[in-house]
Length: 71
Image (cartoon, rainbow, N blue to C red; front, side, top):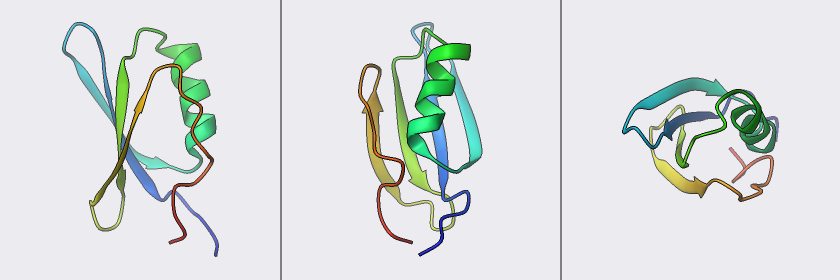
């Protein structure tokens, strides 16, 4: 099954701010991006972009798979 921007992700930071990305393709690459450009993130909540269903919480230091489920 083809994956194409399957996820929306909300990142949470120590100062209680949040930042949202609506079109996330691969979660492993996205976490690497956060580690590089937003190094102080704490965790992210991952949602199915189309249904808005909560899928998983990923904490800093975790290595997620590229995709969580077949869509």
